[in-house]
Image 1 (spheres, rainbow over the protein chains, first blue to last red):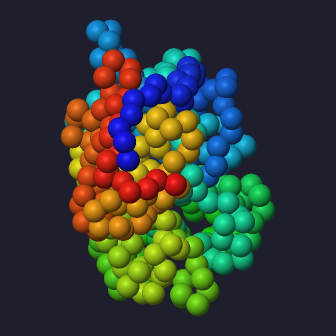
Image 2 (spheres, rainbow over the protein chains, first blue to last red; image 1 turned 30 degrees about the horizontal axis):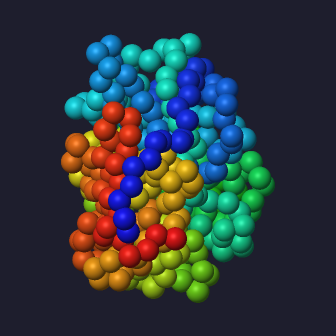
Amino acid sequence: MAGTAVRGRLTWQTATVHSLVDETASVRTISLSVPDWAGHRAGQHLDIRLTAEDGYRAERSYSIASAPGEPVAITVERLDDGEVSPYLTEELRAGDEIELRGPIGGYFVWEPALSGPAPLLLLAGGSGVVPLRAMLRYRSRVGSSVPVRLLYSARSWSEVIYRAELARLGDGVQVIYTLTREQPPGWTGYARRADQAMIAEVAWPVPQAPLAYVCGPTNFVEAVAADLVALGYPAQQVRTERFGATGTP
Amino acid sequence: MDALEDGVVDGNAIGGLLIGVFGAEMTTAVGTCARCGAVGQVAELAVYRPGLGTVVRCRSCDNVLMVFVEVRGVTCVDLQGLAQLA
């Protein structure tokens, strides 16, 4: 196709930080007041742009952590060598303004009509749980009874995001953890990186026509998606979102 | 996701960039590789951000499908690696 050059058309807007909640020692949820928000779908993301005094700009994408209909929130993990996440998790205060654009994305989204009565399989590596949490909240909000299993791989129990909320889900939602580096005393759950045997135990059987969403670091997503396809999941029933090599949950 | 600090991600990460360029949600658009003919949704393509811009590659043959570079607020777009984007 021929080359071209066009101006951007997705509008940056100013949002105000409404509140901040610490999820873990390095993860914070930021609720935002966005005056001109068109509404979002569960699983979409937004872009945040920071501008330094000298005009230098850094842009990052963050999954939206809240369900459609709820105020916009993002959950940010601090990356020690990051340009944006240390500011968002340490400097930002309620009442501050930040620039964002969104909502963005139409592929890694869940709506009840997409899965019908078929079960949902959610697979999270680390902060990959964020868009899946938006899906779980949306499911509750719309009163869906679709059965859900969430496999959440984290390095340790203290790094599990939304712990209290995930413990309260009940009602057709099963949460299965694997803690890959460190386990609390008496831990009886999985204690290794997700592998084919684990995925085979956790995944809904193929004849139930499950729909799977996999989100996390690139290596996690590629391994898990390959395991699902090897189990017989059709590739188009496995939706993936990779966010780079930011550690190994 | 604090995406894109390093490594390869996927087409989800450039949804905002693509809306800016095409004026529409494009991650569900289907691209056809001009070299090997592989067909895939944009969200599933391999995306590299080496610093100066964004490079999108075919997952089957690694062909460069799209390149985006922003210069003074204008995004330059090279789609020569795509036979089709629909």
